[in-house]
Image (cartoon, rainbow, N blue to C red; front, side):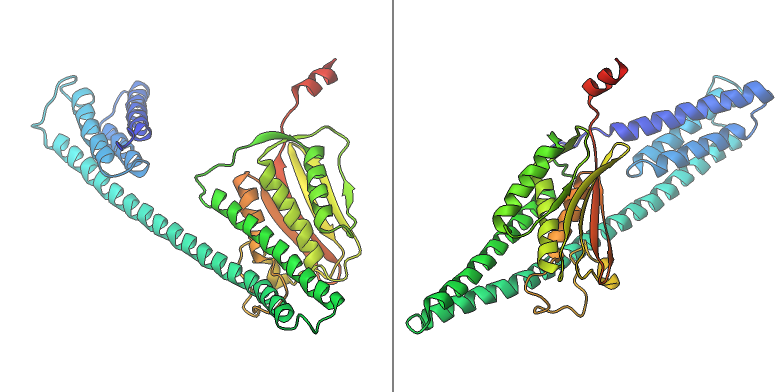
Length: 358
């Protein structure tokens, strides 16, 4: 595939040179003299072009064009090239050296930034794999143990014991299915260059869908729902946001020990819709809050620290919200409960605005 024409670099080059010419002309009109000033202005233009373009070509081109412009329009004899004067050659050499040095430095900085981003990406992948292995190990072991027990002791086990073991297998299998859904979501948004496909979604319809799905897996859990009275439409990938809300609700059910109240609240702040899932359970330790959405597990956590870890689910939530241009945060006090909030941009409804005006 052929590379795209560097329109951005071309615009930077043209804009910088045009600004330099306009600046020198303005200085000449105000002061009547431009001795030495023209060269300095075009050196700055070459520096600017070298800073904000890719490679060396554009900075060198700015230096050469600037040197020719100074020689032709701002040096005696005016509007004629004269390469015999030492100062003309010196100013051109200075601009060329500045552009090459600046281009070299900026190229190194960009390479270092690229290496840093690649390092962070590898670190995130390692954290993801660690979280996945941590969260999958216990339910798989539980499934294997329950199935082995039923097979090896089928005749000696009573009907209730068999149903209990098979129920645990079913529960763990459902959780593994949700884990796979999370991992599939990661593959959809694992690149920052990939933007989610947003469609206008009515808030009430979104919440109803989430609650219906949640009730199927947790019929005994009551959720207090608080929604604004206004008709709210939010551009989003509804499937991904439903998964975020489901993950947050299920995390509260699985991890908020002692919880007696679970609340799903949505309110508006300006042009943002703020979603909040709050519980009054055991809370989250302060040191865990710092890495709650990164997929990184605390050093003291082991494979047996809980039946189901919450690292991968919340890291997926954070990635989904970030891909939507929003932000997610958590507040928690041990023994008092946890509140996790995220916001999304809402969509203005023209019909409502016209009705208000009438």
